[in-house]
Picture 1 (cartoon, protein in one colour):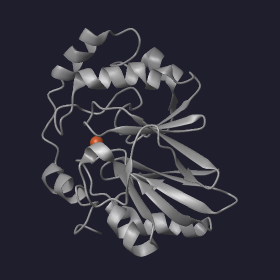
Picture 2 (spheres, rainbow, N blue to C red; picture 1 turned 30 degrees about the vertical axis):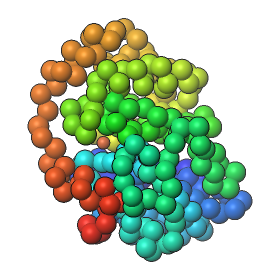
Picture 3 (tube, rainbow, N blue to C red; picture 1 turned 45 degrees about the horizontal axis):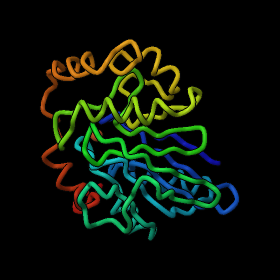
Length: 231
Ligand SMILES: [Fe+2]
């Protein structure tokens, strides 16, 4: 499998490219509108055809590249069914794997950061969106977020994956790239096994985060797959 972790520096967002070496089909997960040209260059560099774009959730911090990529490549866009969007070509659901050549992408429904959040398991890796970050997690104070749901999603779903599963997050603000389920269990300061549910709820209730800078632009645009805000 061809696997690339691509970075957008303004919002510290990771986009993932997965490509099948034989069929040369590819999928992009969480592409950013401002980085579509870069994404298309990487696809071309590897001789890949974009089959799908998948979203982990409706993002509040950046406008998605879905619609621009669909217009420019003819790919199909998959968005979680709970996102409530009607711009997608298909709905992402747990139990319904997405196949790209020989690559099997298994959606896991992990509400908490938002009520539509999904992670994607691909063999020995899991792409965690904003559900589980390295030494952290996404905030839970808007888009129907719920700290209790996030705790359950991480403990009952992500932490049941094998310890050596590689964790690829949707963001990192400190130039870290990858973790493992075992490492997050041991040292995640919010969700690690040394904390219980009450500890986690208290941490999340006291984060005191600023209102997200681009939420008023990004959420409405992303409800339309990034339409109208293409870079
Ligand atoms: Fe997010």
